[in-house]
Image (cartoon, rainbow, N blue to C red; front, top):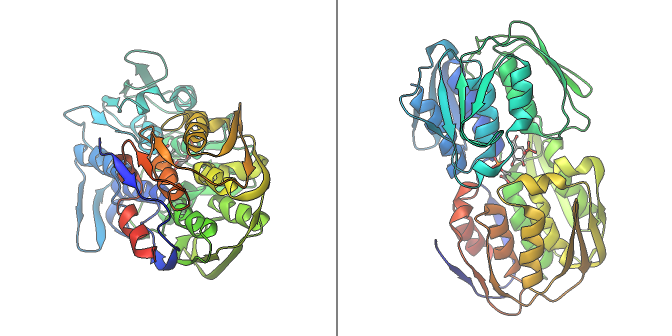
Length: 429
Ligand SMILES: O=C(O)C1=C[C@@H](OP(=O)(O)O)[C@@H](O)[C@H](O)C1
Ligand SMILES: C=C(OP(=O)(O)O)C(=O)O
């Protein structure tokens, strides 16, 4: 535990910066690079704790993964070369590692035993385990049904046609990965588009994948071919700094080389709906992923309604959007976000608790929250709930509080944004 005292009102947020690599794409680069034949070089890989858990899993299955000054180098020898690990596989705090790896481990010809930390051990795994069992996977809970720890035995997978009941890219990705091991094709359909990095990367690594509207079909194929991956800056990390600039008068901030995949840019739509001064420039596509620069400057904002199809496009940004809404004129309503209750912590409860303690006018609802702005935040002692996104939200709040913010523990920030406080320091006047 590392308590953090954040002094209030440290001045304007201004400058040009890059944020660390995208967490979702970094995980996937390690997974695909480790399953492929050949060397995969990953530039701008996120050195966050969650991605380290994915690296450790493949190292324990015999893959050589090393770093040079700039890149992560993965020496893939194909899925047939993966070896039975000698110990349990530990997924730490990472939901993405857990869900995606279950899809891979279900197809491997040896037994594995998988565990996670206290938070991950409470998060639902049935959303992945149940369709994987339909495919023929042999997965058993060690204790309580449908949560970690789990044992995965060798099973013969068959393709399925599956309509996702939850709006989850992790579930979709797990099933597409399992589809690589199945003896016929697998078709996954969604009701609402979720992040599609897995689909882009499957294509880049040579898998046989066809996308038609909201359905994706994958044909079994264990022979992925290595390719280099450029990881864009993480828009979910950029979100904290962008909100910092949007709420501190006279700020102006540019973030370069940020991922702008349409399935991730819901926060930009929200900024625009609130009337923010925001501009996107220099957009290029690399392996199907858009990358560009975002510039924002301070402006009075108006409240808005956030609901429906935009939610999966900004699901991880809702804590910081809630802070933004405390500074917009009027009532912002966030709906359709029940999924927040199944993250590192119940994020509806945590956001409402932290922002209320800091002086905001906010209520939780079953599937979201209602925020009345604009309020002068006061400051005070708050818990980060061991959740990186809550810790960074409270830290950004201190830029506008009247008094100090005391955070019980800032160590979770290393999950997705090591160097967060150094970057923030650089931008403060
Ligand atoms: O696929 C991914 O990389 C992720 C998908 C989302 O989770 P769900 O699939 O549970 O919505 C998101 O919240 C998580 O941070 C990363
Ligand atoms: C929910 C998150 O990640 P994960 O599901 O991988 O733990 C997150 O990064 O906000």
